[in-house]
Length: 307
Image (cartoon, rainbow, N blue to C red; front, side, top):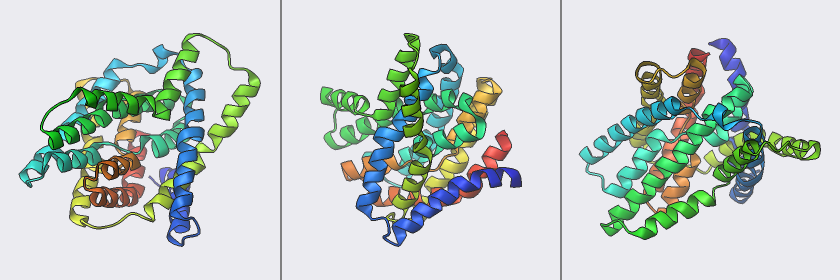
C-alpha cells in the first residue's frame, strides 16, 4: 500500500496546500470562488473535451458498467434514505443526505487523479460515472426537493432539470467532444496544443480549489457527517464493487475505475445544491470536510486494492 500512498500523496498535498491558503486567508473565499469557476468552466472542460474528442463512442459506452454503477449507487441511496426516514427527516433533508451518501468528487478529484494514475483509458469509465451522477442523481434531488416542498410534480421541474444539464460545462464538453469524435474531424495541432495547455491547469487548479473551499466548511453535526462519510467512503465502493464484479461481470479495468469513483469523497456540487435550495447546507459542509479528510486513507486503500 505504501507505493500507492506515495503516488496519491501529491494529490492530497495539493488539497492540503489549498486548505492552508484558505485557512490563513492568503486565498480569500472570493478568490476560491473565482478559481473554482475557472477550473469548472475552462480548464476541466478543456480536459474533458480533448479526451472525449480523441475517443470513439463505442470505446466509451459500456451498458454493463453503467448498470453496475447505477445498481450499487441506488442501493446505498436507498439505505441512506431509509435511515433518514427512521430518524424522522423530511423529504427535502433526506434527499440532500442521500445525495451526500452517493455523489463523489469524480469531476474535480477523480478525473485528474485517475487519468494520471491509470492513463487515458481511465477517462471513458470516469466520464460515464460523471454523466450518470449529473443526469440521474442531480435530477433526482431537484425532483425530490421540489415535490417535498410543493407536494406535487409540476412540468416546470423538467425545464429546471433540462436547463441545469444544458448549462453544465462538463456535460456540454462531453457531448461536444464525442460529437467531434463521431464526425471524425481531426483536431488541428494549434487547437490540440491550446486544449492541452488549458486542460493541464485542471489537475492542480481543481485540487487547490478543493482544499481552499474546505477551509470555509463547518464541522457542525459531526455524527451525521460521520455517518454520511461512512456511506460514501465505505458502503458506496463496497456495493458498487459487488455489483460490478458479482452481478454484472464488468470487465476488470472498467470495474476498477467505477469502484475508485465510488470511493471519492462527497462532491462540492452537493453543497451548492443544498445552499441553493436552503436545505441543510451545514451538514453537507461537514460531510464534505470529514469525508475528504478521511479519504486520504480510504481512497488510497481502494486504489491499492484495485491496482
